[in-house]
Image (tube, rainbow, N blue to C red; front, side, top):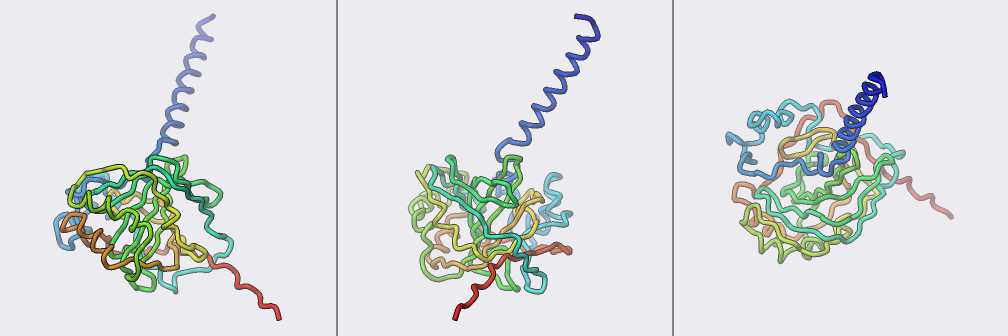
Length: 283
């Protein structure tokens, strides 16, 4: 084989290696959906604190988006900003029970799925459910109203991009998913970084009826506040009992009991709503 062929073969091998590395990076699980920091001692939710929300972007260089980003979450979904977009279509989700563990991250309680828990289709792309966690009070508001709690179902596509489905709760009756997990939450209460298996968890207990929802582009709501997250906020509000709210709040660290990030500027972003056409009445 001549020197020209050796050079061509070398170039081809380098090119193939680059493609392989890029492909691996593109499909690496957890590229965005698992980026939320699990080191709560590095930040806090206390206004005015040196590690509080207004200073998150100054704590680490890789957290700069928390201050400088123009598409940050959460936001207020005020009615005058929302456009009805029926072409969004129904939220297509397909969840199933899967093996999971429960994690006390100090700033919240998270359920991490190790098995296939299903997911959602958004804009023709499949997003697999990776984890879910709770914020109390709610992070998003609707028309300025803050709810008692917000559940985040965090999904990820094959390219590592995140899509989060948010479900809002008012204080009322027990939530079925939390009822299932209460014994495990009690066991890991005040044990930061503790994780234990909880067997199969069925996310269908949390999905709610998502026929009407809001959609906008935003970010993770904890550092590093990565942008490019597709947010879907279910309009129908569910209920959680006062006892369950107190259980979640007491399980995390004392200064994390109210773990909702302040509202962020909308900065002219589009906020869409899907609502089915009303059924025609037949007489």
